[in-house]
Picture 1 (cartoon, rainbow, N blue to C red):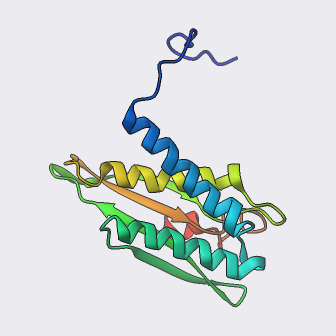
Picture 2 (picture 1 turned 90 degrees about the horizontal axis):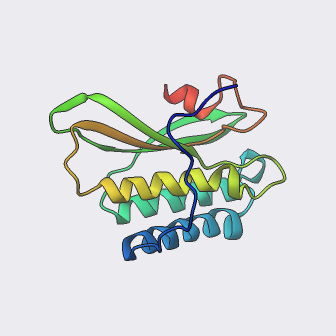
Length: 161
């Protein structure tokens, strides 16, 4: 049995601040677009996978980021990881990686796995954009994290690493 440090929270939750309500709304919107509008996103639904990548890239560019793509071929198709970097001020060589994957398992719109992770990556990038950070933060949306690519040479995060 693993013991968690500290104590679990109990009691009523405080109301969300205006900023927290904005973040909640933005997170919900990202998940709705990825899982509700685009739906299943993988190499077998290539148009949807491309639509998801396009949405992520547009969102990051609208925030003022230069988006780097890491393209690679999988089963005769192009797949891509998408990355933005916020350079650290005092420790730029130390890197904090924030990542999520935007593909979904075959037959699923992937709301929880992993539109939520991708939404979090987009919001973390937005929230950190105007801050001065000691370390470099890289926000990355990975592709091909679901089977049959999970734990293979074609898994996006493995290729990124």
